[in-house]
Image (cartoon, rainbow, N blue to C red; front, side, top):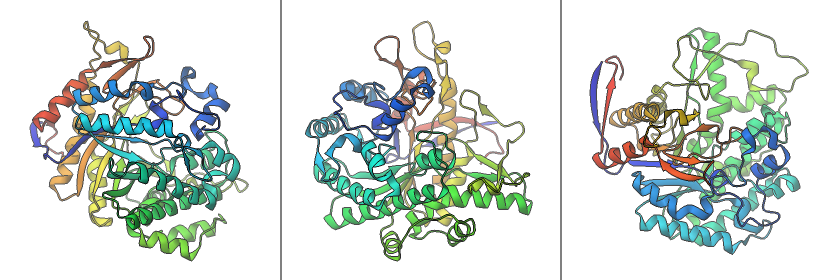
Length: 475
């Protein structure tokens, strides 16, 4: 073991992320402005831990000035959140802006600028308007692609002088995977064709928004926040390597390849056709995707995904699922976050960085989410009332260390952002697992308290030095 100190470049982002639906709450929301998470919560509240959901969340919409001041105190250089599509418009078909909600974002961006914090804004972080889901089937419809582009046009017109870093989606694969592949979330349907249609239409929507942004000559960039899972095979045997290869194809390359290279992997078409998965695309749509790749990527990284070759036959009456080709593999002796049930393996950052460098034209990117959710954090409160979250400091340090190593080795990586700035609502888990630098006290009107990690993060930002005890065999 040895102590290693790495310098953090002055232009390197040290920020944090959240979303509109997980923080803002419903204050001021009008009839008919439900998002998909809102409808899920209304239809299926019992699956949300202790009944908490997006209704109040952290009440950021009323407390953003207090929270932006806390961002500054915690040393954030950047803050990524989303604009809630379902609330930004009152008429999704005609693009009528909700001026009350839009004015809130004007004030938020001005407040962030006053405190020296740069906004990075997603156009959709699961906030598909419920109206569009119920009327058109959501992202299964090409009509929704066009209405999303109209929404993006209205957002750019309103805020292009205040925001220059835009992202079309956060984790565009997640909703349809949970709903249409795994049937784990409302409205619960196993339909692989619908899953692929959502994937394609979100990729097409991204390309169309990139094209719109460039045609208008706006200052800045358009990217996408992806959550590729760094996938490791159980062994070097051909069958395990194949399991990892197919997992990577369906969950990672399905978005990485078209957004960076402008083309879907050829094998994706082959396997979907082989398994009779029907989805609709045209040559013109593929051309739009080819000609309008993103400017940058945000990459969300939490845990490794390990797979092995399947040991059981797939039931012939079950619709095709990519798990036909793989099974999860649990590495013996792995280090775990037992609250979340996720393996802790900081090397995923370096490995993903090298992959982007070598396979994805070294496109500009940053770690868009990295964090540790822990249950019952009150047990770590000291005599002064501060949660001593040394486990979070260690987690951040180790993952940031791998990020900086990758940058030294030529990765075009421009920052590291935490999930999350404050504790916030997560799908189903609600406030069960806490991720924030800042505690949200549900027992005292959602009072904010800085955790030990917030003070540490501010010191990290000010010193621009990361010191970590590392294994000498580590990179």
